[in-house]
Image 1 (spheres, rainbow, N blue to C red):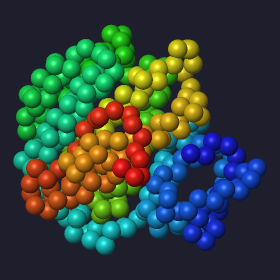
Image 2 (spheres, rainbow, N blue to C red; image 1 turned 45 degrees about the horizontal axis):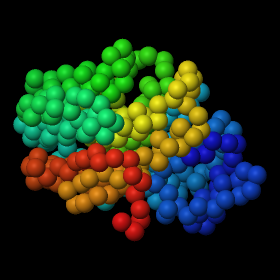
Image 3 (cartoon, rainbow, N blue to C red; image 1 turned 90 degrees about the vertical axis):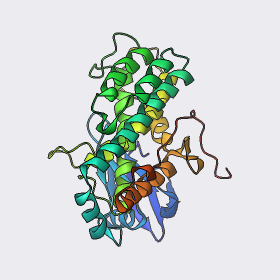
Length: 296
C-alpha cells in the first residue's frame, strides 16, 4: 500500500518507489499494489510489469475506497477453451455449485460469531444445513440479516455512514480485486457468474467467489472496532485490511494464506466446469486472524 506522494518506475526486475528515499521491491514478491494518494505517478513499464507478473493494481477514489483494478489481459494460454466452458455450464451444475458457496459462507459467518464471542452460532449452522440447490429458499439472505445484527448491534444497517461500513467496504473491495486477479490468471472471464448475472457488473464471478471469504473481513472489523466517532479509515486501518490477504484460512489441502486460498478456489472452479462436478469446488474455512508464516 502506498499512501504518500510517490513516483513508481520499473528498475529491471523490481518496482522502484521514489519518495524521500527510493525503495526497491522485486515484482515476483508482489501480489497486490494499492495506490492510496492523489499524487502518485507511475510509468508504462510498471503497468506492463504488473500484467507480466500477475499483480493486481488498485486505484482509490476521493473517499480512499478502492474504485478500480488493473488486471492482466488474456494471461492464460487456454482462455478461449475455459470461456466456452463457462458459457456452456448447465443451470443444475451452477445451482449446486452456488449452494456449496452459500453453505460455506454461512458456516464461516457462524465461525465469525463464535470467534468474536457472539451468540447465534447454532442458528446460522441451522441455516447452512437448510441450503438447497440454487439456494431457492434464500437462506443466504435470512442468515445475513440475523448475522450482522448479532455481530455488531440490533440497529446495524449496511448503508449507514459509519467506520464499520467503511472498513467492511474496503476489505471486501481488496478481496474482490484479488479474486478478479486470480480469475483472469486462470483463464476465467470475471463477467460470467454462477449466480450473479448483472449486465452492468464486470465482476459477477468474483462476486460469487467472494462470499465465503467475506467473514474474514467481518472478523477483523469486529476485533478492531474504533471507540471514537470517526467515519474515515486511517492509513493503518487500510494497511491491516490489505494484510488480510495473508491471514491463514483452512482449505481441503491444509492451512494457507487467504491469497493462496483464492488461487486454489479459482483452480477448483475450473475443474467444476471441466468435469461438470460441483464437488470439485474448494472453499475456505474461517479459523481466525493469524498471519501466515512462510515456513508453515
